[in-house]
Image 1 (cartoon, rainbow, N blue to C red):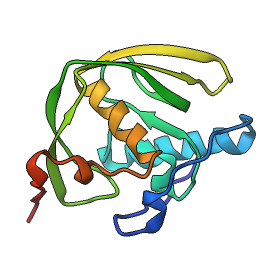
Image 2 (image 1 turned 90 degrees about the vertical axis):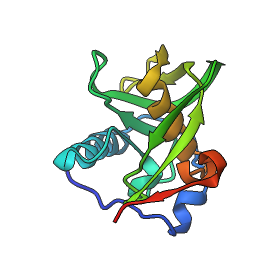
Image 3 (image 1 turned 45 degrees about the horizontal axis):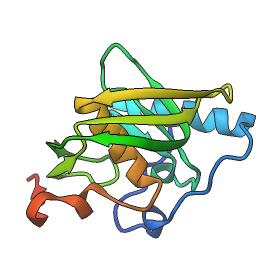
Image 4 (image 1 turned 60 degrees about the vertical axis):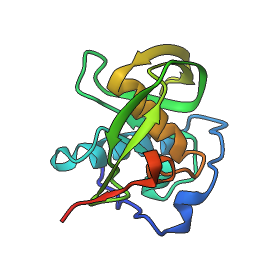
Length: 156
């Protein structure tokens, strides 16, 4: 495993749509491991998507500190949403900024795991927020694009 540099807001790669993973190769497994190490570095994040480390593939990792632990998603697809919640979000690629974002209160997502097996997960609360946030990265969308009333809080 290795730390990767986090791509920051303003880099055009964060605005691109990622390509699906056709085959889970050792390179994809290394990407997953490196992304987790980068996310955990100094407890900086609870999720990270491949474009945040400069790779345009439909892959992300989340760990919100609940009973699920670290979850890896390859070619994720949100298949169901319900309700609404507003949560104050931040992002490793947008340091020093936060914003309230409206997201579904409950979701269902299907994806492949690192063994190429399809799984489905229902999530709510912070886990649902995190999955939606990371899934947006795969489509070139940042949380700041979805800020409630366009209000972005800049930390000083």
